[in-house]
Length: 310
Image (tube, rainbow, N blue to C red):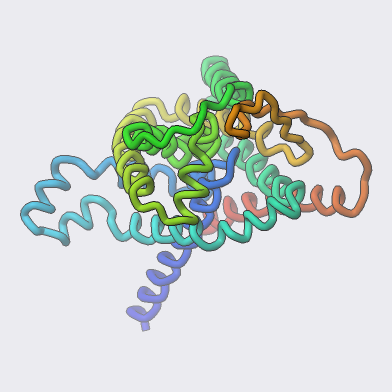
């Protein structure tokens, strides 16, 4: 009986990891939303960082010696496999639903994400043990950095394969750094449509392969840096991450309009600007959107309390 219960618990844990992976995958392709935020809220962020950090010389030696069992244990491979499987599933399947929602119900879907991120600011901020003036300044700095991304001019599209690798290295920050949306950074680099829209829908294996190479390099580099910071300066690191997430609230504000100008010769938008407003009137859509903000906040609240219950 005890053995059966343990097997059921393991199956449930894998399913939960898969679902968290789906949420991260969907978040990573939506401009303004970060998969790292989902990882931090669902309390797998530090485990993810530490697992990725384990892909080091020891891991290479274990692979070369064909000791796959020790390699899997050293890198927390089962955890990563279920999580990234969910992320891939989210990118290639569930994301289609969100594409439909963004096309026909943009205010509602942004409202849901606004609620999620607003709650994330509160609950992640609570993880900081000492809110002193130094940590508060770091928090403000993080918020300014995230907000400043809104006012940068996007570059032109560039399909050079070396630049695609650079896009992978920098774009993966969306998973590693909560609040800094990897897909939004790709917009600023000019390659969001090329990589996350055209390459995926047309399965351009060349672009996807080089982007994957860059992403893997970025994961290894960022994981070592962040793991060190979390170990030595946890409160300060969480302060700047909370600032990043706070700054991203402007990006996901539901009642914003995208204004495009400076159209280039090839008829592509070269400059994006946002204008923010409040609901013009309390119609059914506005009321439902406000409910979705509350619903998004409630989901994070429940996730926090479920984790405490464990």
